[in-house]
Length: 325
Image (cartoon, rainbow, N blue to C red; front, side, top):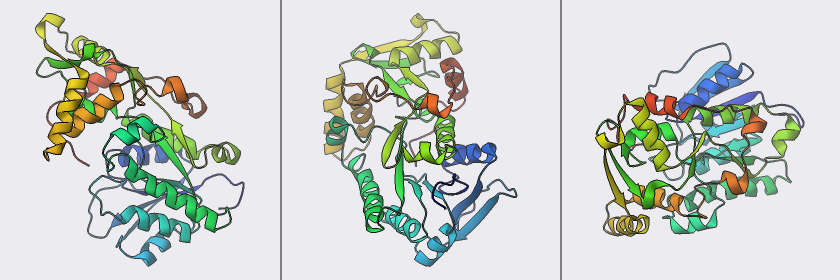
């Protein structure tokens, strides 16, 4: 990529995943990128085809394959699940640097890794582990005299249309039940998967100077700033139900956090939900990041979304899916 040139060639790993699929769709709809999809040889997802889409299938354990597939790319997007091999991120970053890729979107796409309260409170696998990729990219950049790769971390908080069907907000439309923690009034930012994917595409569409302003920094976007009460009210509207038709339980937030910690200590990973969403409901833990960090929605041309429509779109899946990568 010539210095000062706009991003044209974009590679993506994990293009069939929860975030990868809408990101790929946004890149295609931008109609300005040459897109390379990296996939394993033994993987068989179905990808869109087109004159500007190339699929590179090979062995992720092969440095030569990765470097060859990434040669000539301006940017690499990593939308990887949590079940990937431990060193895959590192191998991809190394290969990108060797192939002279300038921009890397590491697997962030979640809560604010710059919020020290949140990072220190949650288990290392949830937040601290992400720092390794950022440090590695910066180290490679320094070793190349500043000509090496740079990272951009997209902060979205939990994806609302991923979280609602999995009852992660503790509001279940099909069952007409909800558990509200300390009144359910704490506000947190949340983003749809489509909005997150569009944000990535819009970032890569920025002018070189505007994109450079985000080098080795986090970018904050959001679809909504909502509370459990807001989500409950939306669920009642779209199901045309009254509050008295719901079974509402109330629980102290800190009590739920302590119970979640005990669950994790006993090896029950279901405690992660209470710990994570409980932390985001605490003041100063990055749930509402727009009040302190601001949002890049305006710069990226991200339009407002309708909460009721998002909730309505989740009704068919609500309660039928489990947590997964």
